[in-house]
Amino acid sequence: MQFSQIEAEIMAARITLCRPVRPVRRFPRSAAHGHDFFELGFVRRGHYELMQPGRAAVRVEAGQMVLLPPGAIHYERYERGILPRVGWLGFSVPPGGRLAARLHALAGEPRPVPPENLELLADEIMHERAVRPPGWELKVAAAVTRLIVLLGRQPLAGGGRRRSPRRAAPGVPVHLVGQLMAAAHHLEEHCRERIVIAEFAAGQGLSPAYFAAQFRRHLGV
Image (cartoon, one colour):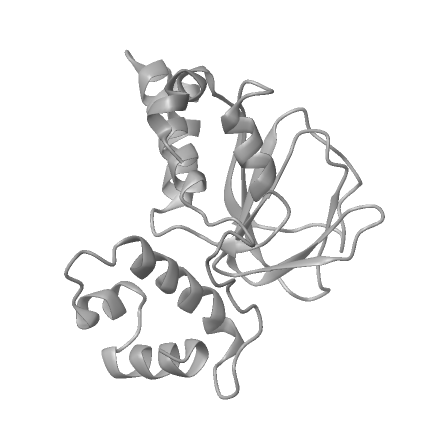
């Protein structure tokens, strides 16, 4: 994807809703609803099920995100007694363009959260919109661009790249799957750079030996 060809579409994008990552304290499910903008949900802790009429439930786990297109009727279903930490970013882009088509193609499937911290990105946008210091529009526009670039780098299903396994391999703790897939995505995107395993494992909050063993066990490489 050549972002230079859709620069005007990126510049015309707008954040229309932003809610920070927060513990979900509500009934086991939300009410069915839809939006007139793209909504990106991401999970830092726990999990939830994305429900859409006529479709199978989609489980979104810690370390994963899922994108929904405008108009998609959906609701979130939570497990009783489980307190997930979920956040949402909503944004609009010009309809009918290459950027919108790309985002529609990415929608509906759980994907690893990019290495960049979406929680900080959400907080930054909310702060800028609330306080409105000089130049806040430019800062929000830059945040939108970062978000779109992160999404645009996500591989499309069936695009020639191996799809990420969603289930934990034997011996791999389920709660590590999201971290391992996020790590795999980061390594794939930065494969031409020098990466020190010890430093990378520390960024995941794991020891180098444990990280390497679990990564190899889950992904086979």
